[in-house]
Structures are given as C-alpha cells and as structure tokens.
Length: 236
Ligand SMILES: Nc1ncnc2c1ncn2[C@@H]1O[C@H](COP(=O)(O)OP(=O)(O)O)[C@@H](O)[C@H]1O
Ligand SMILES: [Mg+2]
Image (cartoon, rainbow, N blue to C red; front, side):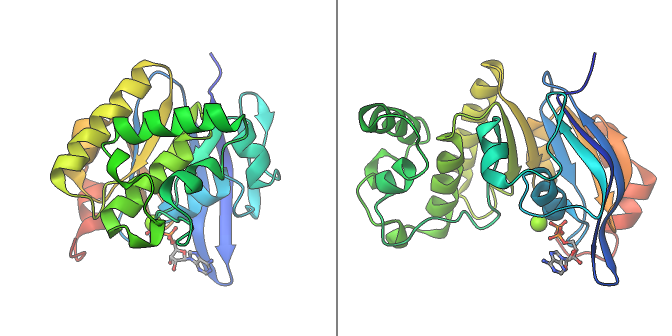
C-alpha cells in the first residue's frame, strides 16, 4: 500500500543552518500522527515545506501519488492538504464569520451554514459577529483552526493549535478532531504538551536539529533514550 503523503529526502537550509535535514517520513490515513521535538527542531519548517509555504533545497514531497514539491500553497490546499498557522492568523478587522467565508469557495449560503456548524462544534458560535481583532489569544487559535477546516481538507497539519487555549476548550478541540478522524480526515499534530500528544496520537515522529531521531507509538518515542537526551536542557 502506498502512503498518502511521503516526504522523501527533504532538506531545507537557511544560509549555514540546516533547518530540515534529509527527512524521510511516510504518512498513511488510518492513524493520528504526532510530530515532536525541542524548539528549533524544524517542525514548523517541515510543515511549511509540505504545505508549499517554503521550497526544499533537496527532496520530493508526494501527496496522493503526485509530487507537490514545487506547487504553490493554494494548489496544495485545493488538493485537500491544509495547514494551520502557528499563530492562528486571522484578519483582525473582519468579523469571525467573514474570516471563515474568506476561505470558502462555494456559495454564500453553504459557507454560512458550514461556518456556523464548525463554530457550534468548537463552542465558538458566541463570537460569530465579533471583529477577529477582539478575540483572546486562545480564541484566535481556535478560529484559525476552524478557518483551516473551512477548506474541507482530507489531510490537516496542526501546528500547536492547543497552545494558549484553556483546558476545557482543549478537550472540546481534541474530541472534535477525533470525530473528524473517524469521518476520514487525517491529522498530523505538532504540540509542545507531550500529554496531548500521548492522548491524541497513535504514531509519533521526533525531530531534533532538523533530523528524524525516532518514530513509533507515543509510548515508545516518549521513552526513547535519544529523544530524552534531545530534550535535556530545554525548559518547556
Ligand atoms: N525563515 C527562516 N529564516 C531563517 N531561519 C529560519 C527560518 N524559519 C526557521 N528558521 C530556523 O530554522 C530552525 C527550525 O525552526 P522551526 O522549524 O520554526 O522549529 P520548530 O517549529 O521545531 O520550533 C530554527 O533554528 C529557526 O530559527
Ligand atoms: Mg514551530
């Protein structure tokens, strides 16, 4: 069986720094994936490379059997592969629902309906008509996630969507994402909180200094000697 998403020998350099170093990773569709590693390990850069925000210096990225290595972000999103932004990223002077409609490609009626369904699901309906600039940091993160989900993706890269979100809302998010996974959506989660990774994911890749240093079940990776060493000296 071929992988849904393959990262093959991918390297990204910024000047003398190799942010992502010859990474090989394969993602299927039946698991919920985690991507962990200390700050600066290259996690966000890897997501940027997959989603077309950055171009690798070397390697290929293949989605659904087709190379997407040099495709622009909007083409990759149209293919069903979407990414959240680490900072949530919304248009401050637009209302929440306008932010959602801005990324919707169908009719206004359907967009309103779909947006409201997602807002309700993530317990955000009460901020529907607020300017996005008035939201708290945590709320902005959730609206950013919902905005990504408005593209009706089949494969989603989640870059720290739980960070800064209150524990109750974190529970809601994780349970909603679980339901979506049951309905066929694949997730790759970057999260600093190892407990969230342990709880949500089935299979974890660990990066350090741009390299893949371990992979396996969350339990295996958490107890991996090299992973533990790579976190030493980091104050989480
Ligand atoms: N646009 C950029 N220009 C230069 N260096 C960058 C850029 N983006 C990331 N880096 C560097 O690449 C490394 C990996 O960063 P990043 O992928 O953001 O790590 P992580 O998400 O794992 O914390 C870091 O050393 C970071 O400073
Ligand atoms: Mg990051």
